[in-house]
Image (cartoon, rainbow, N blue to C red):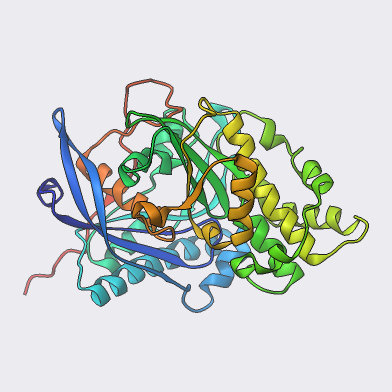
Length: 390
């Protein structure tokens, strides 16, 4: 607490995203501000970032669970343990490489299940990656399990990134929008005040684009959107995909339970029935579809007149997707790097901030919080390993 309140502490954030392609770690210097009787995170200065592959067969095991493979309770328990160790080791490795030793890690874990629009009393979410193993391997305090308190308080548990967007993107022209394109797309609309006006998942992003790439071009992704740029968009197919119930519903969060491999199979099956089926055109249509889900979300948001759209996450590297975003939203679309935020590090930085908020006892208040004006501390703390007496 004393270290964090000093306004000069080093903190870290770690996660494996919905794409499940490795471990992201960001290390940053934390600035805080006094708010009433409490301190709250005010800014983060990125010091280091790394995305590392899962060690050994852990990546295969993560991919299996994300794709819906049945696991025994023992296999789930060991995956929980091994992910925690991998997260902690990744933090420790980057700390050693950069010479920056964090006093606290915000560990999101690996989401393996998240409700899709359930009623408040029926919502649940599950992230694997045991925080005590993270703390043991990283050698410092760990804040984790951020989504549960929001769900217990009547929220959806997502998207949590909205809580820190005003801090990360302080220089964004307002009103403006911040879009994160990971496995699932999520959008935050920011007005003049700190509190987001709206925040919601837009639908599938990398989980569809990468899923199609694995099947159609036998590659983990359409790198740079090169193949999609060679294809033409099938607007009729895109319109058919837009009929998915989530895209016209009221839920603000979704996940692989709805948009996992079975969804990719369904989209591909429909595409293969189209006359003149071409691989590049399917990839182009998928990029256009992701962009259209974002445009549709903006049209349904409280503010349709925005200054621009700032994009972070892996999708920022897909040129076809970025082009379609500009065309379909009608907004100036920029990478978050133009606002001083590494697009690949943005989620890890967000969880570093959420971790600091947890340790400081700061109550975040999301856009869908049922008790307006009443914040809720998100997360729980795991202490570092105890030093043995000589």
